[in-house]
Amino acid sequence: MNGKYYPVGVKNSGKRPAPKKRKIISQFKVVMIAIICLAVIIFASAAAYIINKILNPQAIKILVEPSMDYEYMNPCGDELFLVYKNEKNGIVDKYGNIVAPLIYDFIDYFDNGITCVEKDGKYGLMDKTGIIFTPLIYDGISNFNEGLAVAGKNGKRGYIDTNGDVIIDFIYEGAFNFSESLALVHKDGKAGFINKTGEMIIPMIYDYANDFNGGYAAVWKDGKCGVINKTGEMIIPVEYDVPVEYIGNGLFKIMKDLNYVLLNKDGEMVLPAGYEWIGNFSEGLAVVEKDGKYGCMDMAGDMVIPLIYESISEFNDGLAVARKDGLWGLMNKTGEEIIAFQYQRIKDFGYGDLLLARKSYVNIDGETYIKSGIINKSGEEIVPLIYDYVEPANDLVKIGNNKKYGLTDKTGEIVIPLIYENIVVVDENIIEAQKGNKWGLINIKGDMILPFEYDEMNNDGGNVLLRVKKDDLWGIVEIKRE
Image (cartoon, rainbow, N blue to C red; front, side):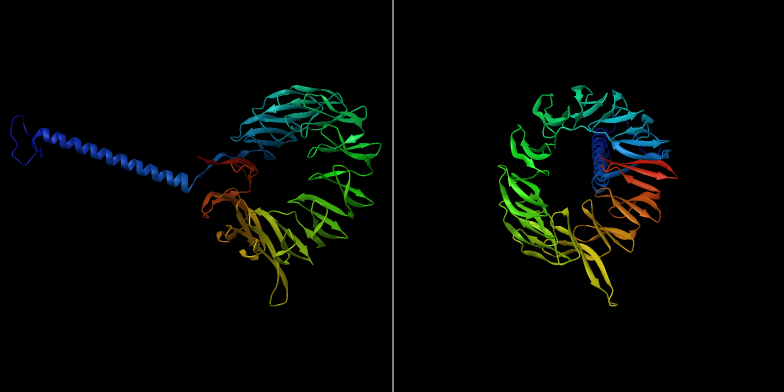
């Protein structure tokens, strides 16, 4: 043995600690080693968390390899897919398990966990486990609105709830979805309105009516049109040959002598001059057309912006895009030009202060070409107007030149170079990309996270599941967030 053994009772020479002291130091070392190991484990776990959860919050998981032999599959809600083969429909879950067999002639999209299905010309309701909880006995079932759906049976119409229970009996010749808590129904050739208990609120004295909108509904009697409110009170007399349409702010438009005029809630004409078209009010102004030119009027019927434009959008945050002399610009609610009319197109696509812009240029050979980019509402170029294609893409901007596509952020910085045949942004970090004739997934850094080996790739719109197709077989890929 190389080590020395110190028998009990032999004194320490001073070169080595006594057994008791050696034991104490050994325990201290063990504690220190344990602390160091624990720190290493904690550090490694924290690093793994940062890498996996923060720097790369998404994880791609292939739930089903391409193996499902269907003619097509489409998402139908609740992480379920409608599948179709041999003219029949069924449902599978995200793992490819059959939820409903391929025996149905029609299956609708799931809404709050239920869907309408048809078989042999009869309709019923199915839950997301594939159970038919309302038997297939109906001639038809509409979409649910305000908790009720129109159902048909034996040539009559009634209403059922989301449990499949009959709430209003099948006594009507015609019935429509509820709108603003009232539903239009027809019986014995007359129209009226009922509430959700089936009580008749507005009697069946009209030949026809529209759904309520903003508290008003157009009604017809003896070929004439008027307007009622939700208590049945006549707001606009039934004396007009054409429909009366509510456009907001207590104003109605009707066509008279081939032009539109405005009425108030008392039936008084507030805009006697006729217009070929009147839009809805937006931020206190409505776009109007006369003699092929557009302008804007206020709610008093006064022209605020003259009829000199070829097109005007609705106002948004006090600004509207407009076209004049074939070119587009931006103006405020007084008609002041904020961006000069110099673009082939300007479009507001919901990116706050940013606008899509297209502008015409002439090259050295005298040929005219159009390039696209993004400007802000001060007219400054954010994404330079150098691209053939520019469109919003889930908080990014898809750009294209020479049939190659990439991405910029909203500052104009290129984040994915223009090297792909197509790009579809799933979310801020996951991107479907086409290379050649194959599809794969990349992240925002351009790193491949799913190989380019699929013939088709389709996001379900919920940014969670992807349908992929390879060699005519379907599979499912999940983007997991933890």
